[in-house]
Image (cartoon, rainbow, N blue to C red; front, side):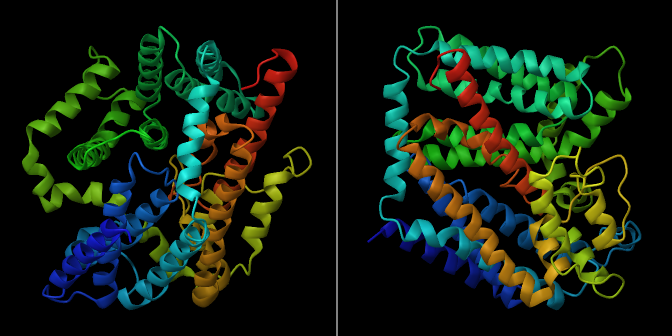
Amino acid sequence: MNYNKAIFALIAFITAAFFTTVDKMRTDEILAIGLFVYFLLDFIDSIGKNYNILDIPILLALFQCLLMPIVVYHVYNDDSLVIALKYDMGVTPERYYGFMFPAIVMMIIGMKLPPLLQVSYQQKFLQAVHSVKAYLVGKGNMGVLLIVIGVVANVMRDFIGGSMQYIAYLISMLLYVGVLYTYFSDHKQRFWYLVAGAVVISVQSLRKGMFGELVYVLLLAGLLMLLGKKISNLQKYGLAFLAFFAVLILQSVKADYRAIAWRGQGNQEQSNAGAFVSLIADRIAEPGRFFDLDLMFPTVNRFNQGMIVAKVLDHVPSRAPYAEGETIFKSLAATFVPRLLWPDKPMSGGQENMLRFTGFLIEGYSMNISPMGEAYGNYGVEGGIFFMLFYGLFFSLLIVLLMSYVRKRPTIILWFPILFLNSIQMETDILMCLNSLIKNMIFVAAVFWAADRFLRLKL
């Protein structure tokens, strides 16, 4: 028997029981808090033991689509300014949780069922890491080569337009993969190559002002790097706390930093890196702002993906009909049909779905309705809930399938962070999830083939 899981379930139960004493807390809100506590503790405990990729979307869904809406409903939803800015939830808690809570539960069941039925699931990941280390003995230059190619491609992205820019973007992702190859190799200078790779990645994020990709890649790659290592509980919880605090700080400064990096606001004599460090230092120097409800609202709002889903619930079907699977089938088709043959195929980024399912025209920034929002927009409450079960099963079975191939080519596991980079997020839609996943798989297969065919390298 796994005593840790029993202890986590008990802690989750006690936490949920405490919130029953809070006035006006709904049963589904209390259950959501309990589920989040359980999966968070279980995820932290799994660090070093297992590579639970799908625990990330589970935690994100619980946090962004259930916990943040709880905060908004109980603290901000009746504020006149919040309503005027349309950042309120827009629908009653009964209607929102009546769809969202069972939809997320069904997604969790879909993601957890296949691994639960496989006794050796955890061992496969641990064995894959051992096999990778054995395979990369004396092959440290593979990682260095991938890092160099990734850096060059990243520079070239600024000079390439059109569809070729996306290809350059995919190639630039080899920088992340190269860091992992180098980390698991026995290269004598691997420390310095890892430092160089980390510096390039950081500079790239600061230059573009885009940190979401960096956070998710670091999370996926970091969990992989720690797999098989003996880590104390104190270290695990300390690492989790620092990671959450870093993300919280990053979210709080992101808008201000982009105003400097993109629009040239602020001190013109200060570099972007200097401005970023100053913003971080200011936030750390004023910890009280994290307890100020008014100052924290922009951060809460950025975390609150449930607000957008609530707009979908409000808009469909009262002002727009259910899509009846149209956008989902189009997403599947768009994944395989090139734009040359389908010039007006759906664009990723969320603009089309936001306009269709919420009535909001998004220009100049990215915003999306999430897989749950699109599931409801197509199939309604019951159909959307049922769809999320298959959505979770799809990703879980895909990982099971990939792990069966990892036995033949263990290094495939080093490509998991870029394979699932966009698929584990909640700020997406079905098109972005499937499109990025399929294209990334094709790209990885092409890189393996090209390395073998032209460089005689078996990656």
